[in-house]
Length: 315
Ligand code: SF4
Image (cartoon, rainbow, N blue to C red):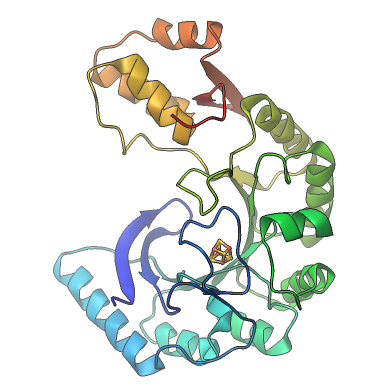
């Protein structure tokens, strides 16, 4: 199995070389929206999966290949098909990766961050993303389906104490799932916690790729707009991570079908939608009529417009 992938363009990290140092699907969670698949091995005991030398060797080869093709790598990103902090060698691995003089990022579900050893090792990274989907025990159990011995309070306190020590960039990521954590009260609690945490950025996502549970839906458009307004009033450091840039656009020759197809899966930023319309010499009035006929919904966040299907049903 290839341990590295990319470099791939990433909204948050520029060109990122992904490092998959945990085989699928060893995780402390079994999130309902996971895109990797069902958690086959739910565990919380840290252990070795691949020898550090093997991972580092593959990374070195990927860096050499990228250099040969003139491709930039802005970050080496630990983003495995499982939970990265389960790797007992995480600290040694990050130290070794830093020898390539490229910043190291870790995307963790934060479930083990109350452990001093995990905190010490994550401190070695330059950029760490922690998952905070909810502050409520019930919805945490529904959305993240954690290992039975984990504690949400311990995790939240762990994130706060890590923040005090970490000198790199700490960001948070929240996935909104319809009917679980997309109510106003949950978002108020979340923004209260994040205001105390003061991360560099907080990112909001919605399920856009096929999730492990087929019933998982993003919040409907009106709910999403309401939540964005609550967030906008309370936090300045939120950013949206859910829109398509239109790169997955394949014209079928029918602009309406194309737009409704894309926006059913990913909201589109207005600039990307205008580009799509212009590419086929279309008329922007078509978009206005889709909004008037309630097929399309215009979301507004911090002055930017995003277009999404009115119904959260996928096509
Ligand atoms: S923490 Fe990540 S890898 Fe684990 S189940 Fe959740 S989404 Fe999937």
